[in-house]
Image (cartoon, each protein chain N blue to C red):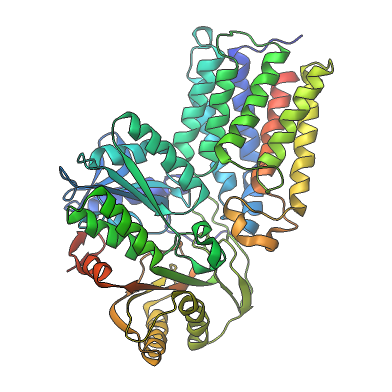
Length: 335
Length: 213
């Protein structure tokens, strides 16, 4: 049986979505002439500033293009659903945001994205644009601790891009922007849980099977299997299980400060996210970790998948400054 | 001896695109088990784009190298994903392998085919046994080369390649993924055929039929 979706044509879903986004956010976003999958901030790219290009597959809205705007990313390259964009739109983004100070490519660590962005970086070099890449690898469930570089990038992108975007907007050097981006990634830890699958607009079939009373801890934002399939538990138990893994790695000391993101994978409602967030606050209070800021809602989704992720971003003075730096994007504002 | 010209390569891309459309849902289902369920979509999209791009060429005025490069670029820009760079690189290497020729003899086609396998391996940086499309492409490339060297014609060489690809794809069922999206699964990838290897079998079989039947 096919899933229900409000679409016209599965093959046109991404382009029609982009038309709708540009119609809704003309003050923030525009596409590059002749390259409709390259979305650039109207305000942001400027001479002497390191350009920040983010991107990835569609289906994760408001990631990635919702975080394009002054103070955050300068451009996003848009792929098909759950598929990396090809090199051309990435290259067009790089050209559009290059201010002569270098361009930073930031995206989640997936084999396809790495190949396409690397090809675009090689092409940009031929146009005398220096590109450096910082991959996000915040998904604690996706590889063992000693192989952090192999992990996926998921909802923690929000904090990682935010820090890098602030560094770029503050006109820091290419080296500094790159360093802060990498540090933000090192300080960011995410765990997800999935309750029900999503379906691609082109197939309208559930992309994995899961029992009516089951959940999967650690599932990826494309439905990649996680680390354990279990009976569905209570919100407190699920939150505990996710936080145990995050805190074990983050190893916070009493008095540490974090930012929190409780993110819906698509169809899990705010009610459930706030119930989880309540438990996050209790747990952090218990260990003497203070919350500098929290975001609860849809930040990195997986179409209509049910489930959520929790991200902790461990702050020091520098990362707090970057987090508090104002930004004005189509789907996110701060400061 | 067969000679393969540009027009024949146009029909080859049409044949691959047809096979991919027919195979799309099976590939998506395979990918749903261990990946993100979009592999069939990407492969159909890529080869449809390649088919359409080469169908627009004037075959009389186009050499195989130009045709293959056109196919590579259109595949890449339609798809992105992992299969985009992998198959685009395969087709660009194929283009380079037959540079300067207008009609391809048996050895040229086998060289083209082996260049595809090498291109995928170079771009993906995967080794045999890592549960990727290389587990179908590498043995297929090798089998085609060996068959030709032992005096077989193109039909027999590509038949050997198709058989080797099939065996390679079957073998991925008993492999634990260490590359690509399924690698995060570890042991749980056991027992499932790699979708990239499965689609490679379909591509290779479609090429075999289109170039030799």
